[in-house]
Image (cartoon, rainbow, N blue to C red; front, top):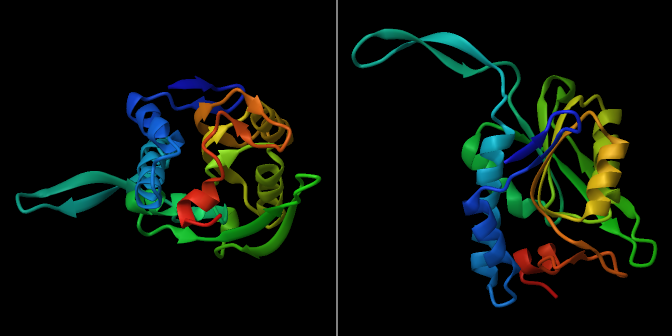
Length: 214
């Protein structure tokens, strides 16, 4: 793991994550396996991203005796996938924190300008009191991610983490410059964006591969 505290950027270079990302990249990996890999990688990344959740000590009675032990404190987690590809990551976080509330942000990318356009927005209540994890497998231009975070902030969200699987340097730069206060967790930073704003070498269109569409 490489973490820059000043920049709030964490590269999760664990061998298991890198191995599973390699399997994701393979064009011969089918839809079912692709979905499972997305969830498994998200679970591994989420384990690290949620390592700083606040806890409070409570008294529990075990079959042997009473003891003081920690539980997560404050409001429960809010998980916000960016539609549609972010939905593929949702199960990985919910496997870690099943009680998390779930919001959704629907954005589509203009094929010419590559800029995001919103078509759906719904957040859990009391969002200002929650730790918010925004999910999107690909951080390409960074426009959708930056826009999603801006919209969450405009509704009161403050404690925000962004988790992706692959990123382009251009996307990391844009998101960090737009929101230097949020924590960014990345499985791997690829070489560059091509002329169509796809990550290279990348893994293709994550949404199409998750949902089996063309």
